[in-house]
Amino acid sequence: MEHAKLLSIYTYLPWAIAAIIGAGIFMAQAGRSLHIRRLPAIDAIEEAVGRATEMGRPILFVPGLAGVDVPTFQAVAIAGHIARLAAAYRTRVLMPLSHPVIFTMAEQVLKEAYASAGAPDVFRPEDVRFLSDQQFAFASGVVGLMNRERIATAFFFGNFAAEALILAETGQTLGAIQIAGTPSTLQIPFFIAACDFTVIGEEYYAVTAYLTREPILLGSVWGQDLSRISLAVLVFVASLTYQMMPAGLKALFSFY
Amino acid sequence: MIFVIGALTAGIIVLILLQTLAPVYRRRLTALVTFIVGLYWPLEFFYPEHNFLTPWRDSVAELGRILVAFTFGLGGVNLFLIHGRHIIRRTPNLLFSIVFFLGFFAMATAGMMKDFGQNWLEARPGPGQQGFWEASFNILFKGALLPLASTVFSLLAFFIASAAFRAFRARTLEAGLLMATSFLVMMANVPAGPWLTSFLPDEGILRWGRWENIVHWLMTQINTPAMRAILFGVWVGTIGAALRIWLSLERAFVSGP
Image (cartoon, rainbow over all chains, first blue to last red):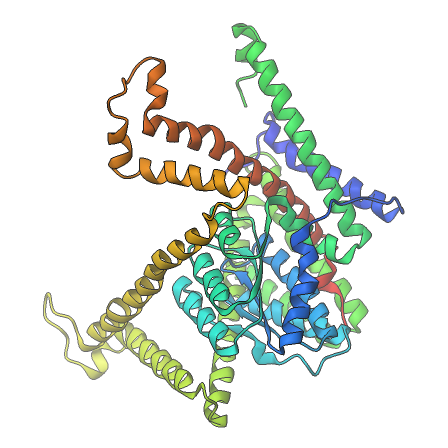
């Protein structure tokens, strides 16, 4: 494995981004009001939970196929917030999983979510279940679960691959209201085609902040937005400057 | 050896503390362990070249793999509990649970006996021959599991058609643009598309009228920048989310009832 290089900009960029995000968190904690733009897909989450309650059917939450990584952790955090909403209406959340580490974490998060919403009796341990770590065995297991339980609402948040459309189309066939969010750019078109609402790109990491309005999370999202704008400006200015530089000077900047 | 004993002792102490401490201190301990473990990788990577943390890299990675292996056991226990309950209570899903147990034990037996039981129950196979257990494993894995996985994968073709049908209904300007672009890209990937414009020259301004060139422009000048812009946002978001998880600021993981 390589190490960071002292003279490379890439060594310092992550720390600069982390510092901007940290500043956002600090400002939010200090009481400064921060604004996040409206996200219709996340606004629809409560409506989707309410629909499952009205129909008396369970909700499905699939946190993707990946194991221990940031998008899956984010998906489990979103599942916790959705479970709190569902617990308020005494509705079950089914959560099939493909990775045993995420299984243990998800079980704890959902159990605590139901307990914190005052409905620990609604949580059934068998609702959080490990199916298989094989992609298509997992997909067929989830499809079977969706059909047997006649789910009313499906949430797909996390890293997905080819199974994304199989799951979303099954939900479509069942008439379920579906909300998806993924950082996997290749799966975004499939979710847009098959789901009612789709969260794309950086919006995926803003879901928990948007749902809870916690200052720390809002500050973090504000910092992410500022970092992205700063990076875009840096890329634009650096590209333009590099193009206009004389050839001799370009060589100086060619190390990275 | 010292590393293994040290890690085992530290693990046992942390487990005992997690079981005995009050929820507030349990959360603090979890946050502290997360922070210390999470600190290793960035420090090791961002400290230039080979450093004092580098010799521990393989051991720390190994520790992670061992912890994951433990949780696979928990996954198996969960499956046994859920399907065992279906069988005991004779629920409508009983048949699926019986198939699960049959499949689980058949695969586990064939897999283990293939490697460890060859001298126990079967004669040693001759050159080019398969023993009983190896043949059983191949039938179950290559003859059943892989074709079943391929079957599920093949369903995607039908699902793509139904999703495309809905997506391409030109009810709005965006959907109309999507449909037109999809038509261009699809046609460029079959011989008919390039053939239709093959009368246009390869050089000069008219070459941009050739089907494959239109699609190449769409894919490299429109599609790729859009995908990169989305990825750009995703990766900045990933740094933010990683920071929140590392510092235990994401309350979903640390808050109690």
